[in-house]
Length: 162
Image 1 (tube, rainbow, N blue to C red):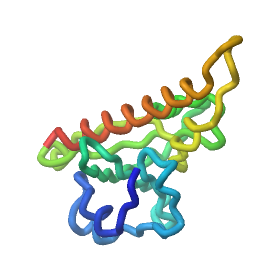
Image 2: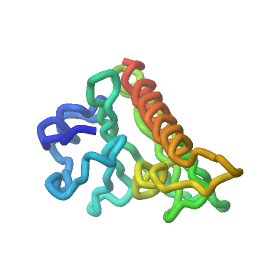
Image 3: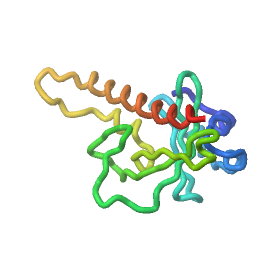
C-alpha cells in the first residue's frame, strides 16, 4: 500500500457524512510502515466502538466507517479477512452502512475482523511447513493475496451499493 495523507484518508470515506469525515481523528501517519499494509485501519480511543479502514480498490481508495457491536461473541471467532486461527487479539463483529441511498435507508453489512486491524501482520507470519517440500513463502503470498481480495470485496460491497 502506498503512503496516504490525511487529506487522502478523509476524502476516501464513502459511507460517512461530511461531519463524520471532518471529526475523524487520524493517527500519526509518519509512524506507519506502509510497505507491510494491505489496508489501513485504526480505532479512535475517544470512540471505542468506532473503527476506520481505508482499502485500495481498483486504483481508488475506499474509506469505510465501521461500528463494533456492543455484545462480544461467547466463543473465539475467526477473522473473515485474514482467516488466522492463532490471533494475537480478539475478533469482533463490525457493521458498516452501505454508501449512498441504501446506507441512508439503514442498509448495513457486517463482518468479523481483528479488533486492532492487524490482519496484514497476521498473514505475513510464516506458517509451519505442512509437509516435506512445503513452500512456506508461496503459502504466505497466498494468504496476502486472499486478505487483499477479502478487503477489496468488502469495500466494493459497501461502495457499489450507492
